[in-house]
Length: 303
Image (cartoon, rainbow, N blue to C red; front, side):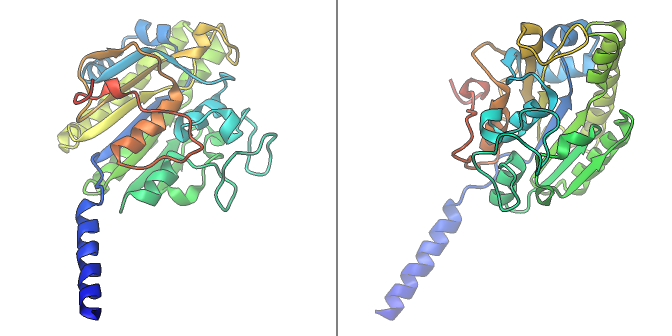
């Protein structure tokens, strides 16, 4: 009887190992530019982003969350939830400085992010967070990053290189990279949304993105990667935080294996859907507190 029980356990273990979900995505790279309005993206000359998004799905009707403020919105993008769940309701949020507590938190008080979800569920995944606005990293437990880097004075070129080096270094591992720049938003505040300064900032970002993508192509890592083009809000004339369409409706895009090509998403979409999509790509379960969902029409194998 003991031998039979032991044999049953071995068979069960083997079957579990065979049926255990494996990551379907090799890497997901989030190209994150702050304060990009739909009109701004359509007006600027962005040949590199245009080509990238032609290879996948683009939405020009995605809504962000209220308030249309930077930290609440990026937190919502990276946690699949609105401010009413994660509690980040303004740009001054810190782990011990908040008004509304999160509905769920880890041992250190952080709401679950896509970095926690993937770290907990995807074996050997490597995660990185590159940013140039110091408050941006505050809502996340840094234990879930293999690398993070802050670049001062609106700089972003060094972080683009670091992100590339990180991806190459871990090219055989599942990888999740967040690559962000705030310089576009600062141009809007400084000179106005749709000003020449603002449009130029988008075009400068496009050049940096193009060089980054070219290097990934040279390393033969481009075709096996999923890319997401993300922003947090629009704006105008020199600010944001309200509920106008210029502030609340933003571009959102995704490309990569299994994603429809040349498809414009016209069904309702929200930026909180970003992290659930990433979780789906890595075959991860999402926390019950998350409210975002996966827009199934973006996949080439789904209706």
